[in-house]
Length: 391
Image (cartoon, rainbow, N blue to C red; front, top):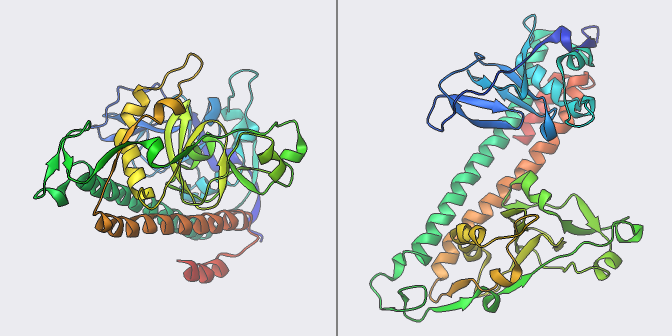
């Protein structure tokens, strides 16, 4: 442990503010990072790569991103470059082990400055080889998590392509008879229904936050929109807050079964997730409860297909909202002879769910190892052997 000691961050990293954002476009080569991460692309860069990007202002103060390749860092962020041959990816993980948001200042707008960062103390090793190995271990876990997320994007695109083939283009029914409907020509035997006639649609509610017995020791999953916007995940493993049975009874929150489809309906409209456990929500949701005729797979595709219209019909003076009354008037197709659609869709959604469950395990493993490895409490050799069992 002689190689481990406390350092000030300024001994390990050189901090400097970014510069005003250049003109941006999606088709340019260099990523542009702000306080909240990637915000576009430019034909200029102000860093060659292997840089740590730290959110400097606002609600993303202390957020962390790593840029391996050349990029532009804006003046809403601080760039950090490794000093004295220290491993930059290791130092990125070192910063992740510190709650940088805790060090923000400013009475109005939160602010994190270079002087504060320079003075923060943290344990670190001076052994460059050990830094590299720690970075490799934690980076391997991060890479696997990112790979699963990328795979899920592709799987969701596949799910939507299958939905459109069946319910928009009617590909499997092209040689059959079609009839006219208020949604245009549809396969004979199909029917147009209001979504409220097809399935159960539920709102939510919030127990009084001042009543402790509604919240303390709560075991009922209770979603707020931030649970969805933070994770941005098709399947949800749970919520940040839980309520008690009496809290459920004393509010307009409603329990719904696992594998329902939740959609945020106010402020941020259209964030979607599928709950893996029985749950309820606050009033910022419309929850769609599938049934044998209308599976969660069809409902997922239907929501995505209609999301622009849903957003266009939202209104409100304080914040935008799609009302339940308006939503329940939306039309959906009641289909027949779509067993093959179910058989094609289910494995895709199952794989997405399995990838997210694996990512949850990988994230817990990474976060545990992060604190242990960065502090020197656990030795690299021990972790390298155990990691083979996880990956």
